[in-house]
Length: 541
Image 1 (cartoon, rainbow, N blue to C red):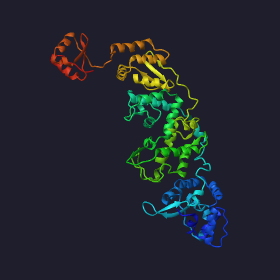
Image 2 (image 1 turned 180 degrees about the horizontal axis):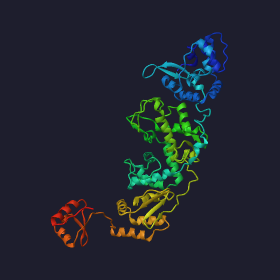
Image 3 (image 1 turned 120 degrees about the vertical axis):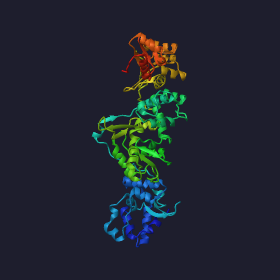
Image 4 (image 1 turned 30 degrees about the horizontal axis):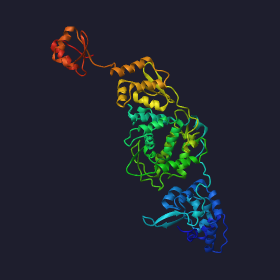
C-alpha cells in the first residue's frame, strides 16, 4: 500500500489544510509540496495518532478497526456500503463551506483526519479500488480495542423489565429427555411438542452431538451419557456451555425457525458466535439492556459481523412464512437481526448466560442482562449456587410415577426407559409402566427387578399393590386386557346356536352369555346377512 506522503500527492493545498485543521496540525510550508511533507511527518507521530484514535466516535473507531483487522485495506464498494461515501468537493467550495467540520459519513470523518485513503490495486479479478490505511501509518495506530468500546444500544426502560425470567438449567432436563428418547423411549425425538422441551430440539440435538454424547448414526452413546448424567448439575451445565462456546459444529443460522437454508454456501458459525459475545462484552455487567436497541446498534456499527466479505446475495435463505428468498442488505433484520434475537433469547438464555425480561408475562422478551453465572460459565467453571439433585421419586397406588426436576437425572433417564411417558406438569415428569413398556425395556436387558430396586432406592416407598402388579407381570408374562369389539345380542339361545352352526361362524368371537357373542371387527354386515337367511332381522346400533 502507498505511504502517507505518496497518498498526499493527489491532494491540493485546500485539502491539506482541511486535514491539518481537523487534526490540529499547523502548516507553515510555503507551497503545496512542503505542506504535503510537513503534514505527513506530523501525522506519523505516535502520540498524535494515539490522541486521534482516542477521540474518534464509536462508529468511526469501529470502521478504522475493521480496516486494521483486514490488513489495512478493504474493497471500496464494500467499505463505502458499510461506512458511507466521501463527497468530491473542489478547492473553492472546500475552503468556503468547510464540510470537514461536519462530516457526511464515517468514511468522510476518517478521510479528513488523514487516516483513510483510496486507490486502485491489483486483485485476482483485475484492478480494483480499495479503501486503505497508508502503509507507514498502519503500524503506528493503537491496536483495536486499546480504548474501551462504548456499549451498543441503550439501557432498558423500567416498563420493559416488568416480567423477569432468570437463567436456569432446564437445558439439562431437556437433554435428559432427548437422550432417553434417542436411547429407545416411546416418543420420537424430532417433535418438540411430543417431548415437552423448553429449548429448541434441533439445537439441543446439535449440542449433544458436539459434546460427544451421540454416536455417528445419531443414537445416544451409553457411556458418554452416563458420565454426563452422573456429573453434578452445575458442572454439567458448564461443560455444555463450553462445548457451545468453542464448537463450529452448531450452525445457529441454519437452525432459525424463521429461515429455510438452501444450496451449497458456507458461513462461519463459531466466528459469528464470538462476534456476538464480543458485542455483549461492551455492555455493563448486570444492567438491563434493550434488545431491539442492541440489535439496531450492531446494524449501525458492525452490520457485516457474520459476512466479512459484505456479500448479501451469496447465501440462499428463504423466509419460512412466505417462502420467498431474502436477498441484499434490505433483508438484514430478517437474517442478521433475527439471528441476534434468537441467540440472546435462545442458546445464551438456555445455557445460563442471559436473564430475560418483558413488558408482561405473555409478552416476548425485549430486554436482557448478563446472568450471575455468565462470567463463571465463560471461564469454564461450575457455578457454586446450584441446588443438589436430591428430590425423591413418588409412586402413587395407581402406578403413576412422578419424578421431580431435581431428582437425579440418571434416575429419570432409567425410569423413562421402563415406562410410558405422560405429559409433564410444572417441574415434575410423569410416567407409568405398561406391559408394552416393560417388554420394550426387557428387549434392552432391563428387568422388572431393576425397576423395583430403582424405585425402592430413590423413593419414599413403593405401594404394595404396585410391587405385586410388577412381579405378577414378570412371573406370568401377561396382563389383564381391555378390548373393543362389536357385540351381537340375539332373541334366544336357539338363534345363537343356529348362527354358530352356519357359514357365518368364522365371523364370531367370544361367547358372552346364552344369547350374546362378540363379532370380529368389520364383519357386522356379513353377520346381518347370514341372520336374514336364518329368518332373523337385525340392525347395527
